[in-house]
Image 1 (cartoon, rainbow, N blue to C red):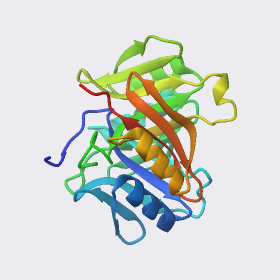
Image 2 (image 1 turned 60 degrees about the vertical axis):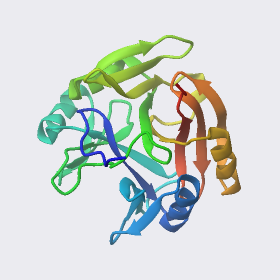
Image 3 (image 1 turned 180 degrees about the horizontal axis):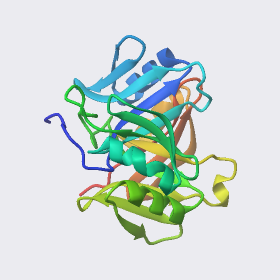
Image 4 (image 1 turned 45 degrees about the vertical axis):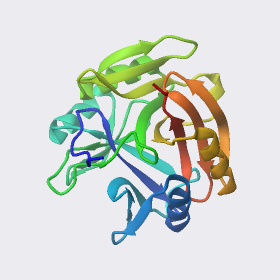
Amino acid sequence: MAERTGFPDGAPCWAQLLTTDAVAAERFYADLLGWECHAQGGWTMCRLGGRPVAAITPDPRAGDPAAWTVYLATSDLTSAVAKLDAAGGKLIEGPAAGYALASDPSGATFALYQATPEFAGAGVVAEPGAMSWAEANVPDGEAADAFYASLFPYEQEQVPGGIDYAVYKSGGEPVCGRLQMNELWTGVPPHWMVYFDVADLDAAAATAVELGAQVPVPPFDSPLGRIAVIHHAGGGGFFSLRQPLRG
């Protein structure tokens, strides 16, 4: 398929793993998702079929679990950064080179990214091995909804069911989501969760275990597809795998 070259405002457009063991992380994701990892002088560009899909960056300060940072696209980085404080967020780093690191009112970190001529973001999404979804997992869904709506032109749609979950749409298309954490999340800090697609979730989860990972949330069916949460200690981090709905 052709390489993707752009994203609507508010859509996840890139993902970066900060880890104390980049070599182990590169090996893990290459074996699990088929990534081709190429050193870029201090960090690693991961590709899928030659197209950029994610970055792995060594960071001696990274904790365990290692942290995936989700980048949200913006067509006006300066304006988005200027809105952070009034909306209850915080600028952590930047802006520089189209990038700024921020946190929402709950403390969940994310990045803002305005495409540059040199780099537009992920060249492939929603294919096996590529990022397909991301969501903010936060303790106060209403506050998160208000915050992100102040930064992006999201249309928010509440998902019916037993959990408090909102889908954020941009240009009428679902791009990411927000989940309100309940008592089952006790002890887990607010965060953005990144999802990578696979063709066969049960087989991929088994492969992750063979590669040394744990599956704290085993495969289950959801409106987004069949999902599992993976934790690979020592460099891999927490993330989700998704097998899309068929049809």
